[in-house]
Image (tube, rainbow, N blue to C red):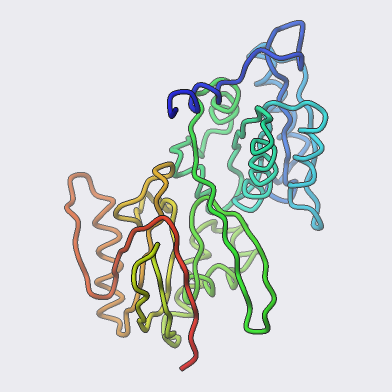
Length: 303
């Protein structure tokens, strides 16, 4: 069955381009992620032409719609390849539309041209994120890879429920504060180092009491600075946050981070950095614990 699923991902010759027997790509671009959107489009059009594709369909995201609606439109018009050109938010929005279409039996695949600050899904797929021409070539001609899509339901203290889908990781506590407070102007100037700046501003924050349950195991409580639920964990700079999971193994890794002092933060940082070195062994730390399961329930408790 796995063999059949993987084979079904191959993009067939379609009527998108009957003169060349290959699909025309639809590119959903976030114009705020490129200094010169027009020059970017011209670059992609030239690269597509060298691959025998005479025409590329373009749609742009908006502040109101980060890419899902545009992807739905492209699919409704017959797209078989939809490429997200932007950051992780654009990729997530476009992928959500593709996931929904595939659940209805449509043969649609996702390509990625990473233009954001983190580009985490692209990193975990080991795309050459600094080479846009290579990424468009991979999106059009590369080997397709299955990726787990994680359904998340979040309920607020007031009882409001929102549903999301993610492909890399979701977090609560320190991690969420860092992501939310990263300055957009600083991200444009120094890239992912803006998250380091934001992290330093929150390093001496408060811990949180949480209750966690994995699959049908007994729930447990802990006091933490951050909880990450990860499908995969390759970060900027080649750092690897996860110990166990891969992008398509059907598992989730729960990472509990609970440093209290500068020394403990230093040990945690050293562990993550050391893991990026070739041949390094896994190191256990009491301030960073790893669990794995297929389903995760996380409750933020008071006190």
